[in-house]
Image (spheres, rainbow, N blue to C red):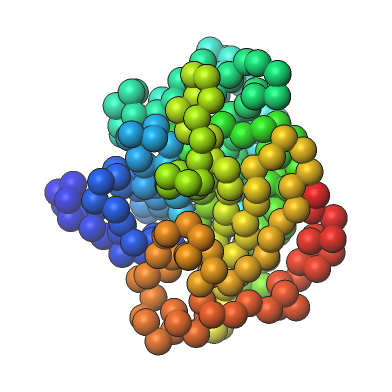
Length: 269
């Protein structure tokens, strides 16, 4: 199969938003028990040196916890698991110097979009989450606060086979003109981060969105519809679902359909 056919095949996956021809679309894959498994897909903007979104699933092929980083000897990567994305030129992504900008409050950490703990069904899949194309400059308190707490909630849903057959997820940081900023050395710092979720359970769909203001301190999570998240980010989520079904689940969300969500929102700061 040639590369263009392969890309088109991955672009038709349910979790993949509408593509932007000005950006680089990549699907990172691993082989698990002799079968190809998509670790995550990504749409990367070379001018911003930042990804617009990453997309992945929790399903029976990847929801297991089979690889524990506690047992991982990092010396094979020189003691630092972060690494260049082998599928794109190095100058398309930020360097450590650009992310670890110094100066008062303007100091960032290497924040994952697809979390390391999202992909622990294999060692290779976990390694791919450390590609710099999957990394965003985040305030440390944001990364370990609201963002991390919501990641844990999503992981709980995704790994619960009683809750969903498949959980489709899109994450990202805003990089459009009015929703990002630059600081010394760092070319793109999103002002907001987001997650869009679509749950398939027994041939029934439900969806919900999360929007976070990127601040150096407590950040309250805004829960919203997919329609609202699309208008805010300019991204067409879940466009590969038939229109009639998509229109139905994108209009509304119901917090009572998402276990633990109410308590999470109360304590998400």
